[in-house]
Image (cartoon, rainbow, N blue to C red; front, side, top):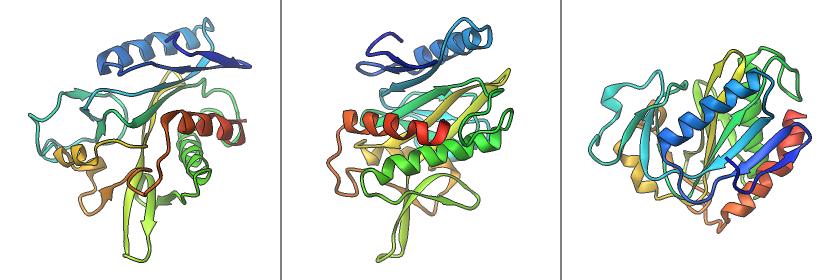
Length: 222
């Protein structure tokens, strides 16, 4: 996790080069959160892209994996249901000590932490003039096409907390191959699709998204 790393006070931002295998990501996060808990490492936001794969959260239903032979599948151990990860999607793994109050996050309050992750994505999208929204009863961030009367998911959220240190995090669709979501029922919501910044007609680069994520972080997390 040393590529393109820099620190902002006691928080380290790392941007992985290339595509990070999912088992490597899990092992790296596990090592880091243990070190954070022990006071031996800084908190971290780790920005990665994965090769095409599907991950199952703790609430994933087998029937929602509709094309099991399409890509490798992994048990993620995070909350939530099925998610696709792949090139063109920015996955941000957020490893924080949740015993501390920070910005919108109250200490030892997972709900306020998830709300803050949602707000982080909403404010990031706003920098590209995209209105991201929450939906009652649905996890993630949604964008509406009010003229067509439809909406689609643009950002996924799935977290795990171990000894009050967070891991896993969010995934924002920048320019992934949206047809790859068709092998699952994304997040268990069959009646709505997925979209991306590119799908909305916005030719945004990954470095621009990374800069936006960093720019609004302090507004949300203090």
